[in-house]
Image (cartoon, rainbow, N blue to C red; front, top):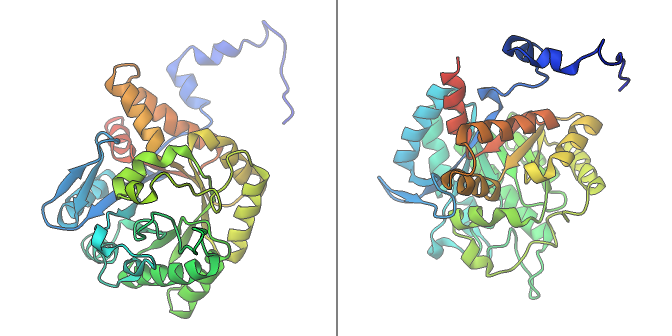
Length: 336
């Protein structure tokens, strides 16, 4: 970028900052409700909610109460929700069969959501960690290593079951090689030609995911294990561009960078260098840190949340998956 400017005092940078109207006029980025994706946790039962201790303010909902929440989200104008299941221990297995059960928790939730609120976009998580007894995102061999191609076969079945239930978008978050192409081919063959794929293309093996694993009940299964052999090394940036390019080539419609704020440089590189629809996930650890500071009175809730979300837009994100989506949507509505 060529910067053409004059020297002080001909050019006073603060001149345009003095008044609110001129600050508004020259704002380079704006956050709107159209940028927000709301993650929701669904559990079995009826009239049930459970709090997530490590994520203050976040609840797990049975499907009937999930529908009530969805009604509020529609009224607020949030375009898309992301569903994550809390799988009962007795339904977990080494081969994750429950992941593609047509009458599974996610599949039933999708059907009811789309029947009640067809205008609300529904995205489903395509990954096996909520369904495996060991908490890994795939099928393991005798050494504990994730077997790529067998895992992909099951992910395809899972994605097809979600599409058949009515999911608008499937979001493979597992980081297996080649799974986007396999899922896209299967969706096409089954007639789900308009089912969108949001690929978690640059998902890092991060320490920011702990509270999420509490929320879906996989932390205990993982037992201190890690996901370094399939999720990305936080040290790498060029590798993320290779992953994104491959997923787009294989048929992804949009890509996700995860985590969010510690990886805004990746968001910027993906958007600038590849120019594809780029999303970011303000993950559970980021949410938990914000909430801890907010509840201790160290940070002002609305101001810090809205600033954090605007930073995603400045970095180039087309949208943000955030646990603050509902509050942010309400604040944006109130500001009109």
